[in-house]
Length: 80
Image (cartoon, rainbow, N blue to C red; front, side, top):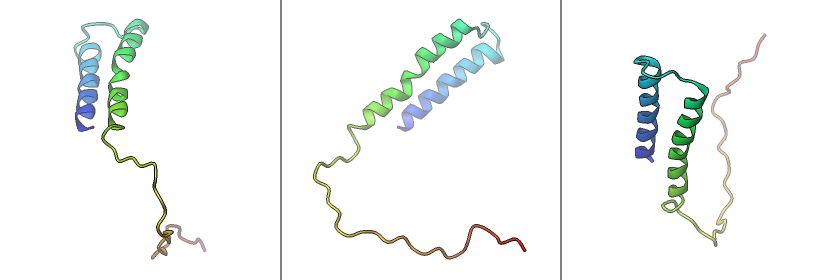
């Protein structure tokens, strides 16, 4: 998954470099569509691939219900 994040960040950096920093090409609607169709499948490949390495069970059973611990302090302050 880390490799997928690095590839996606590298792709976004390449788009930024070519279109915005160096201005080698104008970022028109055509380039936006092409960039999207090329860039969007990258995270999808890793999301599809991750299902082969995560734990999976068809016979999971609840052994004991969990009890939420009591809060030690309140997030909200009372006004007054």
